[in-house]
Length: 326
Image (cartoon, rainbow, N blue to C red; front, side):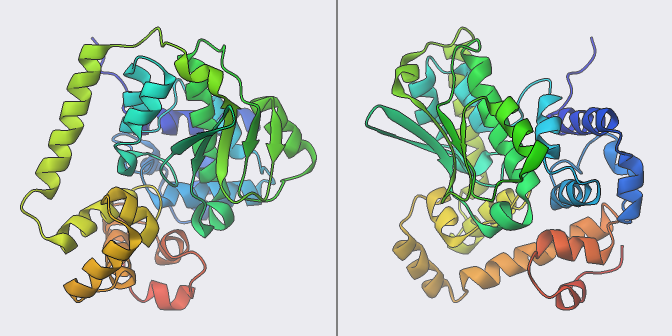
């Protein structure tokens, strides 16, 4: 029996299929950035990295393909949003699944975690916006939104539909907007405060055909055990460091996001940092530098690409000085 493909391998396969259908030379795109085409081979560490984010954005600009992320999402055999999405998939219904998925926000494979609210018969499923996803890496951001949209349709046998989708960036315009409309098939709102999917609360009670209570309990127990083992007998800074590292697999981490992951208010979290003798910004910078060293040594990425991918908007010269030669 052939082993099933990992989440990373599925994402990279979709990337290869999408670029092939668009006539984009993926290997050439990697080489142009000084990255090795071997990064596309298993075990697929490239998919869970800022380097993929940077590559997507670079190809979108270089090939004038502002809807690239939607083409990649369309080639996925199934959405790959991480453990919370798996919890959602195994739940009894949509409402129960969204509630349960919200308990494990740090494990989303996206630019940020998803959360939902209900008001006046309307569900808003959103992820907080930040310059990382709204300004610097829109393709990675859209890739996550498209997957959440696909997941909801998949779980309901395509009976679910959205009333609107919101994006925290500007309308790409022209034929790209048409691709967005064709993919989401609903109202689109750009330049919004958050990235969100809006739909009727009538769908919350929709029961999933693939619900599996026993598998769900086992998965939840596994995640809880994993969290407990990771954070057990660790002080505040160690816990914060591990959670930031988890988010640095795909995105970045802000102070308010870390407060959600640690189940604290922002005020409590700020007080904890004051007591620790280290600021949040200093800890985040430290973890980014460690991640940069990993990209340089394990993935052999050039310093200028690492700097642009990990420290977007910062002075590239200052950032490259922190990164060792690969």
